[in-house]
Image (cartoon, rainbow, N blue to C red; front, side, top):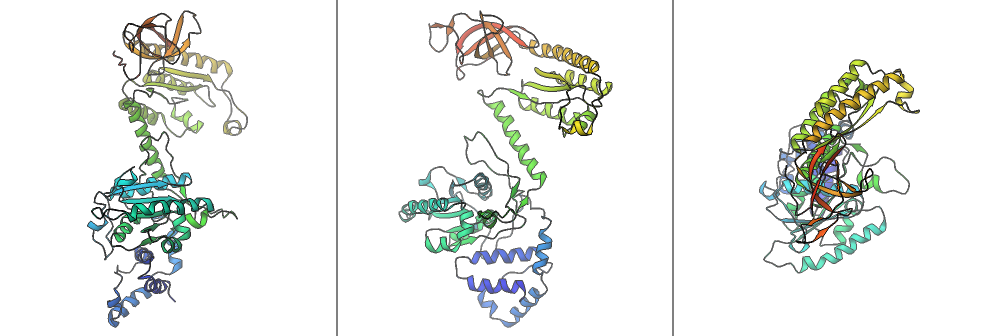
Length: 512
């Protein structure tokens, strides 16, 4: 039997069952890979009309075979851009696919991949007009992103569904009906068991079906259960930018692949997440870039984040950078520096440099000197090259720069760095800086040392001062305190100043 005819038979069996939507998606997939004209799945009444049915069957007969699908899946196709909107299936309108500001409550269970899946699912729903809520009571849609790695993980979801039953049964008729969905690995593994055992579950979506969430929820609005648990050979959500679901998150993860081919004898993952496939490198880099932009924005906006970035250059010569396998050119590095300074005005920059790397010419060295002058770093870490065993340079390159040349070049780099750092740091003279006290100065028992917002070392006398948080009280600064210091002098390494008062991060404002 032709594979697409098998699909149609399956559809007739499932037409009134809980997995009817699965067959529709499979037919849409077949249509997307077929070279024949697009068609609409005929209704039961139309199927009874012999002429239409014969025409439909003839189109199927000229369609692709299973091997055609395997060949086309070997090279992942480009995903449509987020601005493109697919045509809705014939039983739904575009308006019915929209969220209409219904509120979605998301709960995540299991591994870090499920956290990423939650961010992908929310990104898709957000673009469809849904709103996010952290209040379970005001939710119109509750989605559980589930795990199947162990029986205990699944039992947790069964228990959670039991807890959610009263929310659905006691829902006020004046509100839209509450919809509950199971997403992820448990939906993939248990499928019909969930729909048959828990009639309160409205939708199922496997790990590769999150793009279909708006349609599944639209179908559920008619009171039917809807499911899509098809695994894909090429779905990586490359064009979907994950939206962080925790506003207070202090870290972010970038997924670079989906699925697994290892087939460990104890593991369910290949069966719930499908075959291993990697995201396109371009989409990974784009996500990392956007995360980096968010970090720069936070550094600029938040007073409790130090305005300092360490950006190792190692060399100012593109030729040497290539030999070092750094992955960027001098021009790209300078462009990044300019972008950072535009994003964070007044940012303090630090860097690492190596003098005398394998094959470094005098011209290469002078380019590093010119980079130090061009960027004008506040903090620098400069060293002569020292070859290490087991490195690529040890096996592939020659440590051909004489030691005396390395040391001479290093001294020249240090001299230029200090000249430029002194100029940069002298711009703080006359400014009032907020300083976090670290403790006694290493060079003077009568002085204290701390760091300003740019992570520059600030030295000031250990004397009594006014406590701006408690009028009339005079105190001595302790490690961990914030103090205001007026800068009176600067060198390439430190700032020195006169302490004004003790303050707090919240109450202080430094003016230059």
